Length: 399
Image 1 (tube, helix red, strand yellow):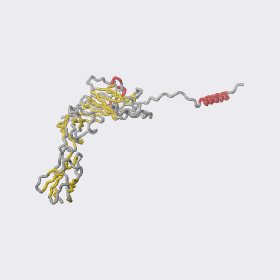
Image 2 (tube, one colour):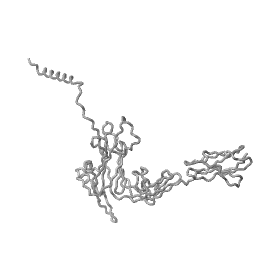
Image 3 (cartoon, helix red, strand yellow):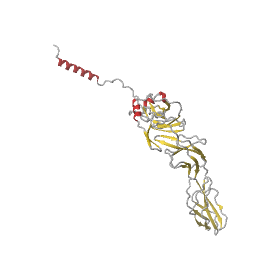
Image 4 (cartoon, rainbow, N blue to C red):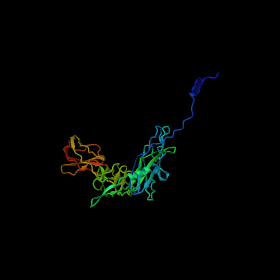
């Protein structure tokens, strides 16, 4: 007798349960390997100096998923120049092989199980994940390729309202279109170790208007403590200072991250070391700065001609066969010590008792004779041989 339909259904379910139970615990097919992608480069900033653009950014130190280590082999830099009045590009209009202008190789993360590096080996110049990387280019003046606008770009262009322009002397107000200067757009994209693009950085537009005028009259002066560069600018005009060679070859980054509006900048002096600097006016527009031509370089080799301060507080005590002197220590970073001078009688010429500087604020004159009136002074001397003025005179009679 054939089983009824409900019975056949129950039998089928039972057979399926047996098959499922038999498959439990068996090893399935291997999962596909992870192909992590790095996050986007960050902190993209630029400065324009004449026809050269300098970029800096932070190399990604993480993947877009929680996997580790970070998968990044290089940073690709894309740039596209667009003409007067153009809309900015979208990602597909700039992240393209036609607009790849440079790449920076990234040092792999350190392997914790690898042996320590040889200290005598040359340093790896590549930036590591998390480092700030630098790149620059001279912008070409070739004709630009205009955009083929998307519908969204056409809509944005059409929706832009003109600016009201008041005409003198009639005070008539007429519409004037927004004028977008010729602009070069930059993005940075981190590429994984499998050669796949990660997320792109924020797009950075650099508009090519006129640069600010250069500062005038740069001059270097120094004191015992500081080396100071001063220049002439309109009040409140920001400027940046660069260390340079005597030929004007500047280092990559300015001496301080923030622009200077005081017209002066100081640094601790180093005697005997030649220092050269340039200064440029700067116009800052968010992460983009446009700099003037340089003023300078100006150079100086500071020479230590600065004497220590005069010792004070000179006191003396006479004992049989000796006169003990003490004074307040002089505060000077390059103090070499003190010389003690002595004369016999109030009108005598003072002669040095020491041929080498005394270290410490005290001295014992073991040549004093009983009943003789002595005049003492102390002079401070630094390592460059500069001598202070003599201390106040001290009269002591030997015992």
